Length: 308
Image 1 (spheres, rainbow, N blue to C red):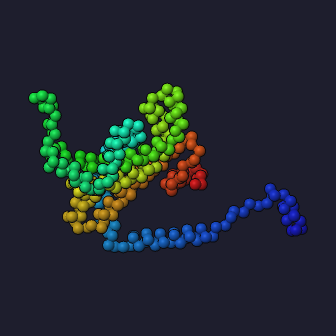
Image 2: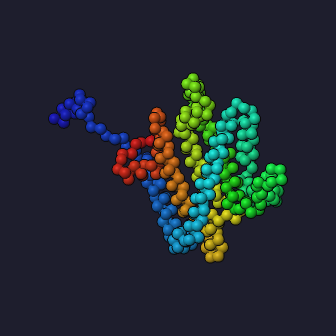
Image 3: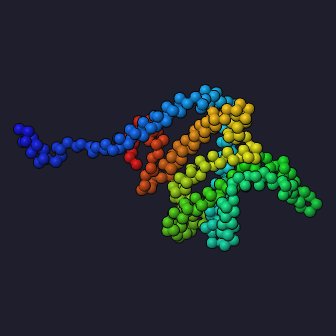
């Protein structure tokens, strides 16, 4: 009887039971990684010298929250300045005009070739070179700015980080523009669109799918580069926790506080990057590769996870 049932099943392939393929190696590797991770977390939680009670006391203190606000503010301002400059420099690099292309290349060469820390110190000490900026028309002075008063730590940090960010971001935009097929520009020219209209309505919307991933990476880098602003006296997150541990001498717990805030802000930016990628990937043949945060979000929403 048993042999007869097997014969019937073999004659009907549709009736054969589907058995998923086993992957014992994957499960073994996952178990080892989970054990190592659990051991690491247990070690961190049980290490008394990390002083987690102190971390909890200062995590939402007024001084630390002020540093977090200043870090977010500086990140946004540097990003706006850098993205505007970077887009303009990228377009200039691709211009057929040799003067515009040469100036854009010189800008990239200088700001990518000098350390960011040197640029910050230079801008903060600009008054030693130019004590004042003034504009005269005849005998009438229209603008008279004292450089020492105008170049505050925030302004110096925005100029130093924003101009540096713009040099790197310009290559991101240029790569995105070059990724769009030249036939798109030819078709737009055939319909009578100007170079500006073609760039704005045809090329850049298609290039955004390529531009956004490295932009998110640069933005996260900018968030962490804001810690360099402490060298010019700006009270961002790292300097704010430094002011605290210089008084309490609890260096490690306060550095953990700063690290936790940086990790939180980076996570928020990563999630925002995922949704931007998803939006600009609409209509493309390639689907967005989902990050662990995206898969967790889909699980929370009760949707099935699409395999990467």
